[in-house]
Amino acid sequence: MKLLYQWEQPMWKLNKKAFTIIEVLCSMTLFSLMAITAVSVIIVSCKLKLYNENLREYAYFIEGLKNNIAYNLKEEELFYIKQGEEKFIHKENINMENLRKKHLKEILSKSNPKEEPYIHVNVEKVEDKHKRYNVNILLKISDDKYIECDFDKDFEQ
Image (cartoon, rainbow, N blue to C red; front, side):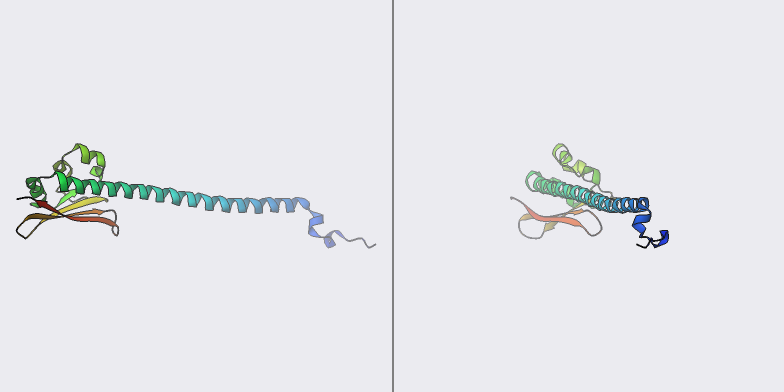
């Protein structure tokens, strides 16, 4: 039987430690890739959950604001919203607690908000023989995302 020289022997027979280190490095690389992928999926999931919760709260607030205007406001109070400058609700006032505890005049502001989200409330009198107002509520979440609610409010004569 012919004896092989050291350089003629297969690599795995020469140095087992090097192969063990390479195996460990490969397994660590695979584990790291899977961990990074899992963490990024979890982060995106948390951001989406927060966005959906905020969107739900905004929808509840708009519904509450609509009901407050439709069922609780008198004609003089609606006229206050209609007259003069545009009316806004700033980010810090967009919560149901403010809507329950404060009067609508306290929540509305004449100054244009500098940060989003904010609500723009617009009231227009409809020209007909009844006392009817068209109310438009626009919640601007970002430059291209908004929620809009448009309804009519009638007053009996």
